Image (cartoon, rainbow, N blue to C red; front, side, top):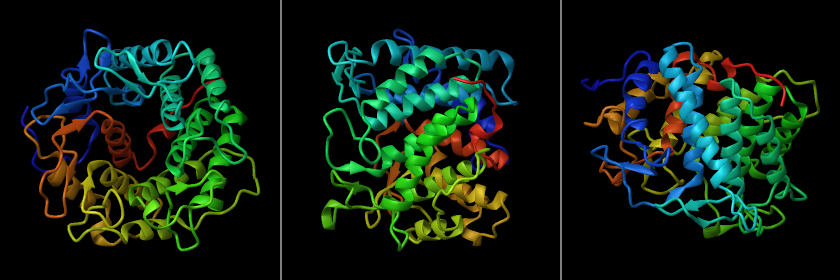
Length: 384
């Protein structure tokens, strides 16, 4: 199949016809029933790389989410769901250190555990995978209960600790993804405890992470006091990611509460896009000359959600304009279903691999582009 040089009008067919054959083909380790950490730019697996456990969880979520899309053929849906269940089963059976009970972070190429810090960021994606599979019809009641117990081990007076050893600095990013996972679990189960945890994460955003000048800070001390100077940074991709996740929060059927208000989404979007480079891309870190694919996908998702809610965006930030830049900068590759991961401000390619972890961002954003809604908003579930 020839690759399109311009983005198609609808992106689900590209996901199903090009991306899925790549990531369930070359991206799938048949010998172990897991996924490779990355492919090279020729679409070959990077077999010698250590693997992050959260990549297995992210791919489980992505496959499960695509499995229950209306446009997915039944045979493909069944295959994707089975692969997602296999990956999730691997995480639950092989991803916890038998001595400490900690969730692993890094695995060796032979899948033995290298590090098991019981990291909040990793755990959030396992919980998100559980939500994705629940939405696809898999009964994970017992597994979700086990993961909630694992999460409770990290509870702090405010929010959750980074890991079992209470590593510093504390970060906003794991709390953002925990918010995402809790909203997803509430969406498919209706269980109030998930909404309560999501609300706690959102309160941290409004009271701690997001500053009055709309800077979203990343690093904090043990008491969640912001670090300063060279110890602090901003990642504009996270701010547009919050725009999308807040849209999902507003769409939940929740009782009226006294939850603190966020500034309007267009203001947050404008604060993030103030960091755009002249070429129209968001930097990984504000002030640095590195532009990964994932912040561009989150920019596109936020733009599409704002458009779907009637916001009038500047021409260069309208969804189609963002998609066209993203496509020419990252998806114009000779590997169907693949992408380039990182460029500098001149467009020079910096990456040598396409990380599997990015597929989660691509799936979420491309489904949102087609529908104007978060991927998880089209599903219903049962209690857990």
